[in-house]
Every structure is written in C-alpha cells, then in structure tokens.
Image (tube, rainbow, N blue to C red; front, side):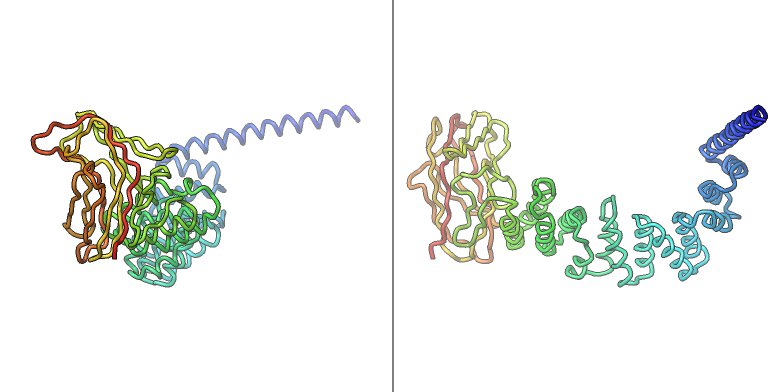
Length: 404
C-alpha cells in the first residue's frame, strides 16, 4: 500500500513538472510573439495566453476595426488598465465627438491610477474644453506628481489666464515645481510674478541646503535675467527674500547705500547685487577675503577695452551720490585708462568717473531723471598715446552714499 502511494505521488510530481514545463514554454512563446509587436504576432500571443490584458490592449492598436471591443475586453480582465481607459476616452472624444463619454473614461483612469499620465490627460482634456476650474484643478494635480518639465502645463495655464496671482495658486508647494515655474517665468519675461514664487520656494525648502534647490544656477540665472531687463525693483525683492531666508550672506542694498559687499569681506556670489569679476584674456582677478582686497593683474595682453568688475546698484533719480574707493597700483601709472562707469539699466544713459588712480579717489554724480538703476563697472580703456599697461591693481574698498 505504501509502495502504491509513493508511486502515485511520484507520478503526480512528474506530471506536474511536465505540465509546468509545457505551460512555461507557452508563456515564453507568447512573450516572444508579443515582443515582435507585429499585426500577426500580437494576436498569436493572445491566442496562446487569452487572459493577458496587456496583450489584448496591444492587439487593439493593430486591429483598428476591433479596437473598441478589444480595449473593453482588456479592461474587463484588468480594471486597473488605465492606458486602455485613456485610449477609449480619446476615441470617444476625437473620433466620435462624445466629450462626456470621453470625460468619464479619463476620470476612471485617474481613479485607478494616481500617477502622471491620467492627470495630464485630464489637464489636456479640460484645456481643450476651456473649462477653467477643472483645468486648474488637474493642472495642480499633474504638477504634484510630474517627473517631467512643467513647461507644457505652465504654457497652457498662461493661455487660459494672464492673472499671475491666480496662476501661482495652481503651483503646488513642491520645490521641483516651484523651481521649474520660476525658470519658466524668467524665460517668458514675466518678471513681476517671480518674487512671490521665490518666497514660497524659500519657505518650503526651509533649512535644507539652498544649493540643492537651484540657488546658484536656476534661481541665480533668473535673478540675473530680471536685473539685465532693467527690473531692479523686482530684483531687490528677490534679493531680499534670499537674504531673509539666509540663502545668501550679502546685505540688501538701498538707495542710500547702493553698494553690496563693498569691503570685499564675503566671497563674490557673482550674481544679483554682488560683484562679478571678469573672465578676460590677459586679466587675472583674485579676491582675498582674509585681508580683504581684490588683486587685478594685467598682463599687457588684455583687450584695449575690457570690463574688470561689475555690480548692479539701485539709486534714486535726481539725487547726488558719492562713490569712493581705495586703490593703489604696482606698475600701472595713472592715466592708463582705468575708470568707473555707470550705465543705466533702463536707458542709454551713461556716465564715467575720472581716472581710478588719481587723487582724490572719489567721484560725485547726480543720478539722471528716470534712471533708478545702474550697472557699475570698473573698466580698462586704453588711453590714446598709451600702451596697454602691465602690473597689478589693488582695490581695497568701494562705497556709494547718497548725499542729499
């Protein structure tokens, strides 16, 4: 009796192994046919494994005459097949003109799958329908999870409304989305909408390292775009937010004291209202924060006209200002062409100081009317009758004070 039972058990195990091997070969063959992805191979895979919803959904793409029933069959086998639900919605909307049925399919897809594609599909649908409230709702949902650039969503948002406050409310408190939107606004010249978004970004990031959240690339570049456009007031709002959030250590300039980091004690941020040193052939600029000072070396091969330092300064139009500096030179004589220049950010106005090395090392000027900001530059322009100098210029401090 025990011998018969053991024999039966061995028989069943062998039969199961054979059946398993046979079934595995069917699955392997079906997988191979599905991978071929042709009009004949995919139906063949379905015939081998008729309960695989993925195969049936792919068959629907090849057999357009039976597309709808095949997609519905795939969904019956797998109610979480959101892609087939979306495809049914697109067919209802684009082919049959049935927007209500399409909407129900899209919503079902979003109900069974919480990821990007169903949400983005609904965002596009409500954009086509020009349904503002639902569009903004799903744009927000899309931006909460999107692994991609938000630019397509932002573009649609601005086509639906030009109200910056309403649009900013759609952006979720997600650092990735906030950074992308700030960059989008910068590239779209929507500078006035940027400061509130940076305030939100700084708040959301909290005590995290700001360098990990675009401070030195995307945010800095956006700030530079704002200043280069002449929007110094907007730039000051951004700069103040960065300072208040301790994203930068530099002070916030004002109309009474427009110079930032004039004592050179902080390493140049090279963006916004801090100094930017030139990267010019024949010029070497070193900052020493422990002394502190700037050493500008001229090799004699520098261009005849070149910029050495620059910084944006905000001023009050019509007021008298005094720029002072401490500088000395080794090998560079007075009159060699070193001077300060102020170039208006919102006009062609430009004024120039006397020679940098002449005493007194000070310059008074009146800010022209309708000019609220300048780009302050230290420049070398070869003077007539002079060769290009070789030597070092040491700059120890720069200040600007409103006199009245």
